[in-house]
Image (tube, rainbow, N blue to C red):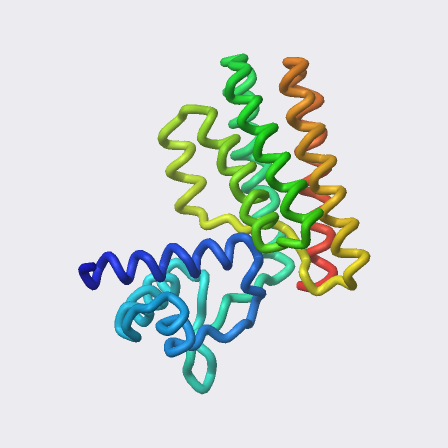
Length: 212
């Protein structure tokens, strides 16, 4: 595999873990560990980390080394506002299409999320959460909207520093909110879908602000 392909492989994997909150803010990203984990050279890892640095998903520590960038309170607020603008716009476009097959695919993602967290695969559940929101954007079928969403590197709001029972309650509530959004789409009820999305994003924002 070419070096640029290996670098892309590393970039994609680390980015996915950051945006799905499997790598928490301020986690150190060691070149040798990621090289071993993904069976690539340290050069490929360094290239990927430098790309993530340019996208502000990672930062360089005072004494060197790469770390997952932290989120300030203003960052959390800005992310919630951006997600609200983009995802509510996507819901508006999606509901106009009224395609049952798209809604069924969103429901399947909800089922994947449920199965993952109920069986203790929280990393997989986080990835399903990211996929749910990205799919809403994709199903709006607006290339510029999708491009903007991806370029914004928007993380999900899951707080993995909770106690275990609080964490499971958070995942259960996320599951409920996702399904309520889907049910509103089934009813062709845009305002209800937006209300549930707003509740979902606001709850996530509040959880993150407690630890920002």
